Amino acid sequence: MQIRIRKQKKTDLLAMCSVWNEIVESGDAFPQTSKLDIHTGSVFFGEQSYCGVAEDTETGELLGLYILHPNNVGRCGHICNASYAVRAAARGKGAGELLVRDCIVQARQLGFRILQFNAVVKTNTAARRLYQKLGFAELGEIPGGFHMPDGRYESIIPYYLPLTGEK
Image (cartoon, rainbow, N blue to C red; front, side, top):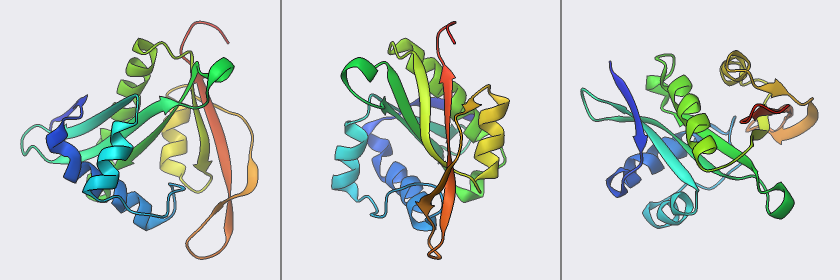
């Protein structure tokens, strides 16, 4: 399988909603509880600073995506935030790492100085290993910060990566 990361196109919208909804339905990584349809997805993805997709170049299948946007406004507007989604069937094949690496490049090109993840669920070990591999630093642990589908509350770990030479 050859994976290519590219900017999303309008024709990707249904597939993007499908990938996003798979993560929302699992209930163990994204804070959202409502699935996207073609209309809400168009608005949601359209509001982002950038959306990238991972595509299988042999089949054209959309394997995953990321969204990139400011984490805050004004004096904190130089900090961006991103979310990543990879189809369950495509995990472990490198799409996630390619998406994060492309996101870092795009964030720098858009002038952001820091990439911050507010709420990485502690039990999301694959994502946490990837972020650590790519040089992200943990900011601590927020006990009970994420409501899991089974009713319990799991800790979240914020991460950040400077996008400039500054620390």
